Amino acid sequence: MNKQSKAKLKKKKDREKRVKEKVTAKRMAVRKDNKRKKEEEALFDAEASQFDRIEPYRKPDIPSADLESVFEKIDETEEEKNARILTQLEHNMEILQALEEEHLLEKMKQEEVNQRLEDAGCHTMEEKMAFLKKEVEKEVEPYHMQELEDLDPNKAPTL
Image (cartoon, rainbow, N blue to C red; front, side, top):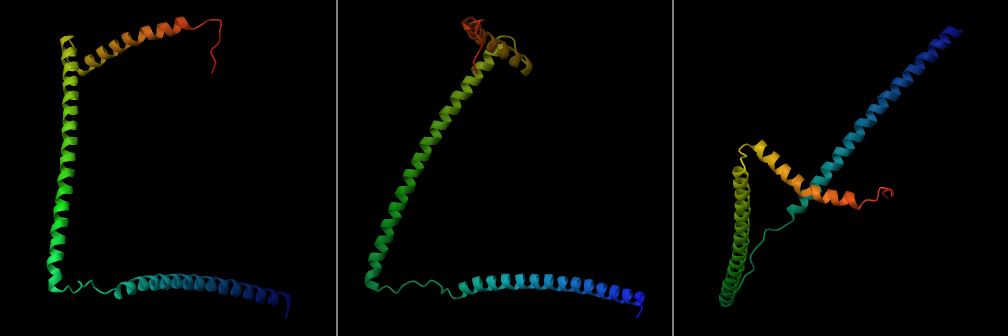
């Protein structure tokens, strides 16, 4: 064999090797995916079979003499349950009444502020907001002036 045919043969074997590796990699990926699916199915089947073994709930056989005591207990628990529900409802009503009172107070305050603004001649939202802004500035201005007076111009502020 000459050099060219050896090179061609080597090239052919290398290509076959690469193709074989690709095919093997694909097979391994498919096998891995199939294995994962089988494991998931096995887990699902195990969980499902667990529920197959559970027997349905059956009430215990109670002698007829004990039935009266059982019904008495049921009646007592019904009364206790009704009492608990009634106290909870009363508590909820108290909370609702307090919330309603709070809401009415807030509404009255809002109406008072709105009436005061309308008496001042503010009818649109922009006018009302501007008026309130001026009021806040008037209230805050003396406070800022006092802070400025307290500052010593020779002393640098510390952070």
